[in-house]
Image (tube, rainbow, N blue to C red; front, side, top):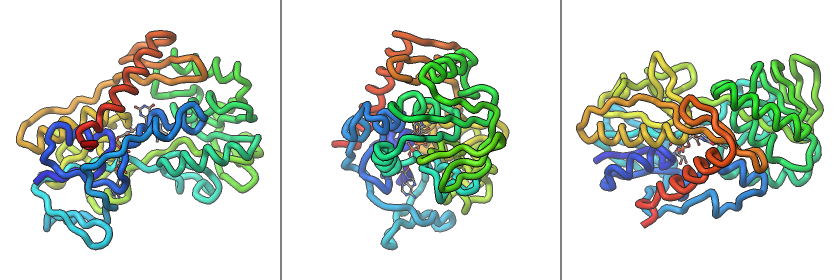
Length: 331
Ligand SMILES: Cc1cc2nc3c(=O)[nH]c(=O)nc-3n(C[C@H](O)[C@H](O)[C@H](O)COP(=O)(O)OP(=O)(O)OC[C@H]3O[C@@H](n4cnc5c(N)ncnc54)[C@H](O)[C@@H]3O)c2cc1C
């Protein structure tokens, strides 16, 4: 039996290749993470960003018994496997920044998003730490607040094209966001953020960066410094040949696999085909990353910068595809 740990983008895509597999997840719904910020900013509602599934074994993973080939879930339940696909996503690495665990809001789960939307109703001064896609979309879509965005690097969206970085900087500046580029956040306190450029007062600090693999990967010897499972080009664990890794929690030893929804979908598909006996190589590709700031849509399509109607169209296609992804698990 093939067991899939985690029913997110990678896990659902793996299941779509083989519906005899068993999917284990701690929640009974699929979360459309790329639209969670729209929910936080009041542009979408819960039913727009979640899809309830039926065919999932509901349970929190406690342990993988690699030798005994079993996974142990809460309430001492166990499931035996012949092949295991680990697709448990990522966590935000809050301990990396002093005070973040105590005083910053993270944005990782639906509960985080619900709490954040509520808290936003109560405050005026918001500081966002991290100028990647999440930080930029938050800064660009939260309305009626004084927003500061602190970003360590020289340009926003550092993993995207310079066209996207420039567009983000222009739009956020026009919206009146206080951009602090080349500034690092050093500590979060109850009153605000200590930065390399002085103290910034804040009623609500959102930590929008610092990703790492899930804790369970720590029980595997062959992982990288960000707790991601090391896999070969067939997405097979370099340590256990009956275990495959897909999505954000897995990466190559000499090249980082990008953490994104569409990469996760492709890797889930490849991991399942290989778990079923094929030998398909996984080659990470840059696909589309489209951001929304108000009514402006822009981003990267492969290595090219896109904006306007074509960007809007790409984003709406991605939304429809994500909504359809868990279709087989709903029945
Ligand atoms: C706010 C936000 C916005 C994002 N925006 C974008 C975007 O615009 N574009 C983009 O490409 N990517 C975006 N991402 C990243 C994207 O969501 C991830 O790259 C993608 O979800 C990775 O898929 P995955 O299958 O690896 O993990 P996930 O989709 O996170 O799935 C992991 C699954 O594992 C389950 N799980 C975890 N731990 C356990 C456990 N112990 N026991 C049982 N189940 C467990 C979880 O419940 C979850 O269902 C965003 C992420 C966030 C948080």
